[in-house]
Amino acid sequence: MQPKGLIIVLPLALAAALSLVLVSSDKMFSLAIILGALLLVVAFLSTRLSLYLLVFSMLLSPEFLIGNLTGGGGASGRGLTLRFDDLLLVVIGFVWLAKMATHKGGTPFLRTPLNGPIMFYIAAAGLATLIGVLGGRVKPMSGFFYWLKYYEYMFLYFMVVSAVMTKEEARRVVFASLVTCFVIVLFAIAQIPSGERASAPFEGEQGEPNTLGGYLVFMLAIVSGLLLTREAVANRLPLLLLLVAGTIGLMATLSRASFLAAGVLILGCIGFLAPRKPILMTMVLLGILSTPLWAPHAVKERVSYTFTQEQEEGQIRLGALRIDTSTSDRLRSWQQSFELWKKFPLWGTGVTGGPFLDAMYPRVLAETGLLGLVAFIVLIGSLFRTSITSYRLATDQFSRGIALGFLLGFLALLVHAIGSNTFLTVRIMEPFWLFAA
Image (cartoon, rainbow, N blue to C red; front, side, top):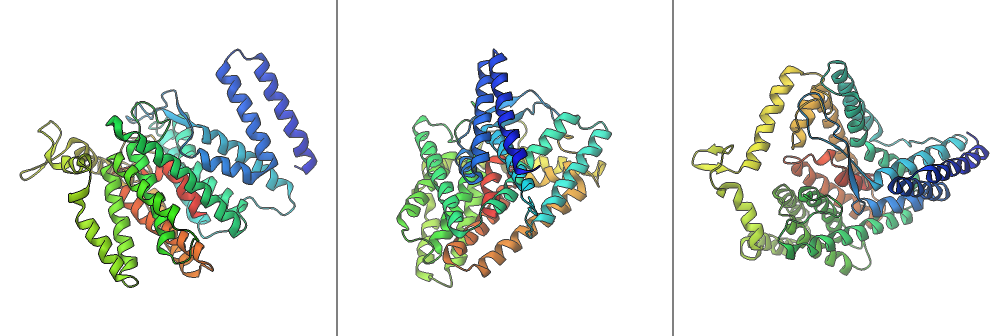
């Protein structure tokens, strides 16, 4: 497509959107059409502006459930959740690819160390799902849309790599992400008086505190990386305020998986400080050891609940200890995934081809088999090596601080994934892949 062709296609698309609005009697549908048309114009005029819109919408966009797209292997009850930034990403991506096509010699995907591992992971899951469809374990529409939604944030990675060309642009994107995080933190803190577990905006009636906790742990890692790196920022006070407020918001989620991940983040910070600032490291360590003295009662009660829940059916016993039903279910999911893997060792059941498992590693094994597990390990290893290399080869302190924060957050999320589908959760993975880019 030539540039003139793109200029012609855009008005035609807007005209088509207007005609749909005129003939439609559904107000919500008309509003969605108008919004999509406006996004199309913004994306056409400025990819960077649309990227900022995407950053601000990552956890601040409404979501809605589409039908009851279930798999064929007992995954009943899983609906496809769509959010405003899903629409935004599709529109921005379409225009971005069209722009790349109009530039002579332009390539949509710049070469990075992660291209191969990402494609390997996506292809492995896609192949497993296709085989699951052929085997009758996966419904085609269900498997396709879940597979597509799981990996849409990796498309964000490629887009950011291509769109953000200078360090100043990278700083602005990071600043926008931190502002978004601050808004989310204020929303979480505002929920504390209600007595309910904090969750992000627009997450439905039940909310997803575990998702918010994973997001906050990762963003607090980014903040910590900038604070631990000398001269990474000119003024540390806003970051310190965000660190304190974010910690309060994290505790308000009462997410045990997030607390465990935060512990890994703290250990990483202590390990970084030990040879450089032993006095500060000692102060941090003393603060952590005294946590039982100052932590809110709700947090201490939530942690102890793991072993103090009243006797109920479904609890796993370890000698005299009783493990609460939620943790017991997660432990059983590991055994359940192994049983499924023995039936489909190479390809797995396919995405949505098995029962819902609320833990990342057994889910990868069950749904994508040995091939998917190898692809996932390759991707994780590549991310780790790339973050280490970025830290060592950083040419300025700001970039070094971001690389350190990403590495700390990455390690924390690996632990968070023990009790959550962390690397399949879009609200965590969108900022993760944004910073990876």
